[in-house]
Length: 363
Image 1 (tube, helix red, strand yellow):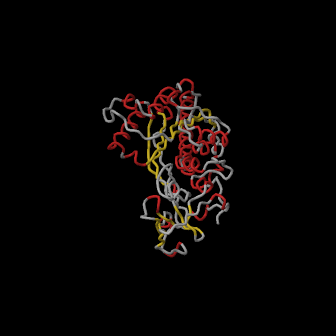
Image 2 (tube, helix red, strand yellow):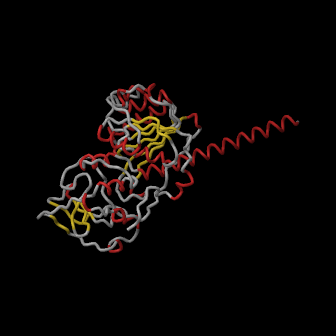
Image 3 (cartoon, helix red, strand yellow):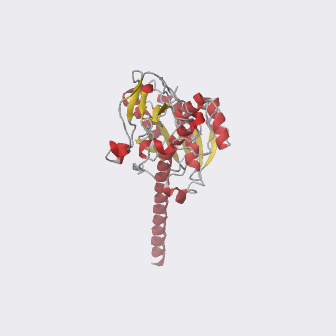
């Protein structure tokens, strides 16, 4: 079994202090996935907001930073100055989507609170995450409105759907990510990281502590596919790095499917039904079981010293609502590279202007 470590990006050590001069705020903070990702590059959290009291407690235990409550009740001028705004905001329909009424199109939604804070503080960078269905939500009007609002607020925005399975985390988790630079930065050519497709499986992050395991023993379990090794059915890594269903419980509904640990985990969910709700069911050591809290933490990229909720139901909900930290780290790495490139370009242009000015004086 592989030794699981938090800093999975080899190049991370080169950039561990790259954002040490940057301050960020963490909206809809949950248990702090964005916090871990940005802090790993040296950025400082100066404000966080989370309305769920259970998540707030866990955030404080792990980050020693107490989030404020409901963001809709916090005035933008009460929020500290910051360079980066990050948010895994809930997806809501905009009541007048597609009317092109600008800022007002977001009123009554939680994106409105992001927009009003951005409008007041004008941070250099926005880093947002949402479910992939946001792209098609309300026939695409939600996405159009978001992009239009950010454009009106002087931001150049790029977005892309990325899967945690492609960035060293053995979990099939597709999410849409937004990266926006304020026009004052001069950055309008950001590109998202390419998938690594590193060979990693659920088996690599299994928990050795058996006390947290829930075994499922029923008469209606049906295992219909035998798998011994990855090579038994897969010929390449890109095909291997996905969930491998090998059986079912009952009628095989979404929370009743059984998967093999040589593949990837299904998407962790905050909700769901069936005996395997929130984590899925897996055939491990000849037993059908759900994932442990520590395994869920690892699937989202949380470090080994992460303190999770004592309540299993709350912990599963929190991990299901969280963001994949590794994916954020790869995105932030690209953000840093584009910032460095822009700074070097600016310095080069300054040198050329100074040299040209010097030549003119000499003439």
